[in-house]
Length: 283
Image (cartoon, rainbow, N blue to C red):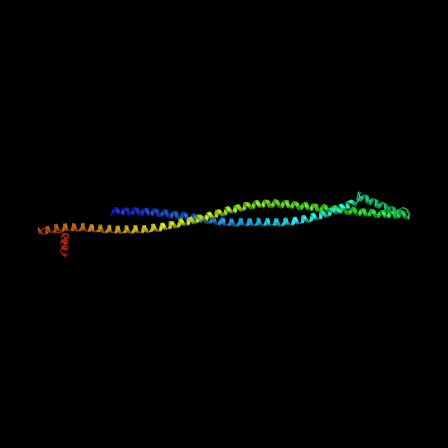
């Protein structure tokens, strides 16, 4: 029986050790699960941020596209104006005198001065008036050509400025598209990482459930072994009590036998010997 009890105790000890290892493993898995959930929470926030950045970049690209269309329309309008202005300028340049504005004004001032200060015949006066009209017309043409050149210059400056804006927008769009590709790749990698973490959480949960089953099974086995141990110990106690009782009966019988011999031989008996003989009669 002692051998069976030792075996049971060894099994109980092994199961308790195994149970503690299961509990420790369950704690580790639970801790890892909490850590993973925190990581997933952080990654979810990161995904939200990255999607926001991508949305802003897409919006910027759309805005650049719209602005580019507007600029192209303005450039087309300017080209049309430039073509028309160049035609007008070519027309003026054919008629405009080669003298400068200053030279024309000096000629005009001299003739007007001559009209006002010198005595002239009617024919001379008439010729000078006609000449003044021609000078005024030439001056008018010169001013028109000058203003047309100024307008053309302004249109070309505006066109160049718009072209520079287009170049800047192209660079911004190119840079934004590069960033957008990077952000999308980053977003994809973050999403893959999140899926991997979620899968790990699922696997951990499966492991935890398996450990819980093993714990329940171990607790059941421990309960059975403890009950077997209790029964064996109870039986051992009862057997020991029975053995002690048998020994006590043997000793009492030996004392009674000696007390009878003494009584038969007429020897005096002690109180205990008399008591034991009396108990025998009572039985």
